[in-house]
Amino acid sequence: MNNPHKNARTTPHIRALIVDRAIRQQQSIKDIAHTFGISRRTVYKWLARYREAGDAGLESASSRPHASPRQMPKQWVELIQKMR
Figure 1 (cartoon, rainbow, N blue to C red):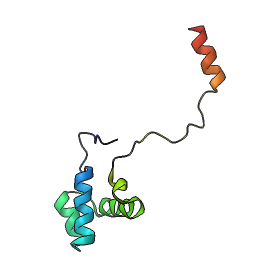
Figure 2 (figure 1 turned 120 degrees about the horizontal axis):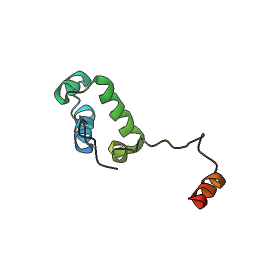
Figure 3 (figure 1 turned 180 degrees about the vertical axis):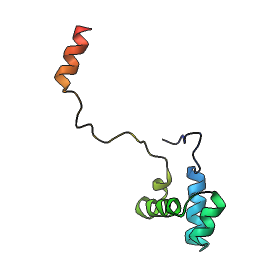
Figure 4 (figure 1 turned 90 degrees about the vertical axis):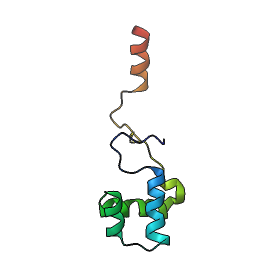
């Protein structure tokens, strides 16, 4: 998923610039955050994701939950669909 919402401050391209400035150019986190209009915490977040997953960690991820523990049982869903 690479479609940031309209209010997103960062895109994968901007995130790559953040990583480049922090790791390769050795700029301070404070300066990077100020330049891009984001918090220092956000800079650290993208650096951590980059260190963990490389360039793939800079892509936008789905906010959909990995599991739905309170999901209706499959047999009930099938029964409801038949009744419709």
